Image (cartoon, rainbow, N blue to C red):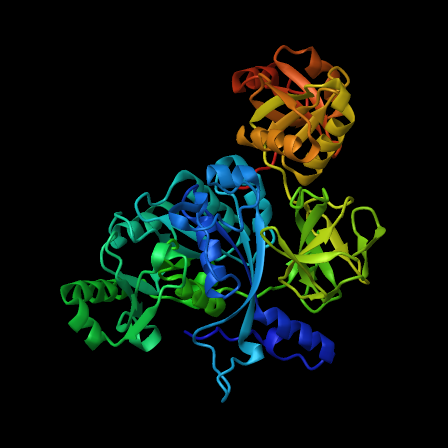
Length: 567
């Protein structure tokens, strides 16, 4: 599998200065992607298996630390460790040399063939869809994880649509092949029938689900569909180490596996007859999805996932600004903030803003301009983050994810730049469906309560709504799902030593309104108007029938739907 050729604008440009060519060269080495799926499909386990194969860690963790394995490094909140779910996005960065990268005479991989992987692990739970959506504004590709037994699940379907909406190419990984599940052909048919995406397997499983022996590497181009190689895996204790691989010829594979190999080879040929061979142009256009079968828990197929990402996923490209002008990767530095997180270091109560470098070179200490305020912003403390572990970063290039410490003025969707002014489009907010009043149990903790509310609001953990009637002491939380309220309560207790009191509020819908409609809306039964922290006025309505009645009886009032991911 070879890396697709660079476009003419990426490979040569005599008019650009040498430093510009250097930036493009560094950008071509980057692969920035997200791991997305339904809950409990194994995202965090896969994230660490990828890091294990890149030799960033020596031993992989697993959710709950079962079977003697450590707890998952990328899940850093106590709530995540206890429940075995990811409720926040975690950014990991590491170098990786593909197993097919050429080596020098002394056996060392050439520097220009070592890729920089920026991997963002996202929440799978539907209550945290908004956090996942923000991440998808910062990546160039996505790995969609599907449970071999459950197939396409509701959250998986929704995230596929978000990727399609944003033009993000998707590599599909069918996980947990070491456990009983559906047949591979059934899973491929389900993908094509339900989402209209043609699956094009690069590797085919040898052995049914629950009897995962290895992978058949399928030929490409003139050898499409042929069984080129058999990659046989050996289990390790608890799956905590890299699984040894044997690379065998088809002839040896036939001797070893007999009818099981014959069946896999025949199915591979059947896929080619159905036109399910990889085409790079169709993949980048979002019409097809390369497929790999794997077991993240056993580390089977993980190296093949990394090699596929390096070979097929697109490098960073230009991004359209809010005025529709493209910001090229070799333009002066610019970046977009896609996430703000506090509490990752409980000893310092810091605030970390994750930015995706869009263009140019980031240098620690440089003074950039905050597009939303026009004010200068110093970048003295810049980090790369691996779970809770941090490393100071001196330079970063397009595609890299960098954490800026104590970035109190930054919020998701904000733009940073130098020289030539640019502002990227804001990240839309999801329409909230759950609402609750938030109070401090003890009046003596009101000051800490206010700090906690402001912090969690700025991070986008929930949307905070206020009005004159309820006052600052009883703000209303608005969220996509109720588990977001649990995160607020857990973090207020852990980070601010505040015991919050949360009371559900009887509203089910939110609509954007304006000052001219506020007085009349507040007179209506089952309606209450609030102001969001960004100044937007929201009318909360008890149910859809009440909303329909008001729209019919008072058509001149402003009640606009909020933007969601798939609008």
